[in-house]
Amino acid sequence: VALAGLALWAVRPAFFSVVQPWRLLAVSGQGRGSGCVVRRYSAEEQDVGRIRFEDLEEGQELDGIVAGIQSYGAFIDVGANKEGMVPISAISTSAIRHPSDVLKPGSAVKVWVTSVEDGKLTLTMIKDRQAASKATLEGFLDVGEKEWLHATVEGILDFGIKVGVCAPGSTTPILAMVHVSQIQEAFIDHPSQVVKVGQAIRVRVVEVDMNKGRVSLSMREPIKKASAQDVSAAARCKPTDWLDGRVVKNLGFGALIALTLPGSDTTVEGLLHISNMKKEGFVANAGQLFKNGDEVQVRIVGVDTKGGRVSLSNVPLDDTR
Image (cartoon, rainbow, N blue to C red; front, side):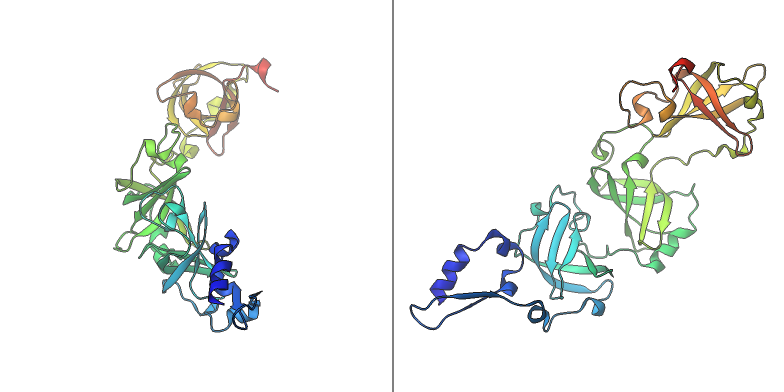
């Protein structure tokens, strides 16, 4: 039986080497020369004596076994009735391109419970980096948009960076996200062009999502609100009038343009949205076309006197559709 069992294990499908073979298969025999009987345990048999999700608590420490690996994270058997997931960002404080860089199926790991929601168990392998509790998040709610916080880069992804940051008055850091569009005003292909793991940076709070337990951050200066400016004079300009302007800020989705209105000393700032830019082909970021200080000719295509906003275009009127 033992030899037959070993032979069966040697030719097992790859599936069983990843998804908990010790729970799914049973091997039995009736003495020398007898055959092997292989069967799957039923879901009810597998769950006997296992931990229930509803009994787990946020921050609880567990011992587990790596049951499967995907590009986005690792599945961990912690003795519960279902496997838990460790997202790739919660596997290591160092940047990794794939979970298999540091894990392999069958490895023993120590994990902490991040959340149990909608029948899904989310885990982390980074101690003291559990998803922020609502009590922890509340410390970020009163942070002003112009208030800067100290943070440390803990991971670099294609779409942004993970940073450790503390709320004012707290010494407990949480893991938060800075999207690639919020790293700097100028266009970048990848966050690694600007920051590196372990680097100290300063960030602002952009959004606190209490329901999802996360904080979104920015490394960019706050956008100047245009509601205070008087744009009534801009309403007298015709869509055919070309005005000289200067790029004062790249916003990614557009450029903020300063221009002096004809027949007056009034200077206003208007938005040249990326959709109203003269360009050839697809452009993902206004920084691909303009940089701060560039001179540009624009037309006024919309004025919101109540909101203090001016919409601009540099597309000739004949080219508009």
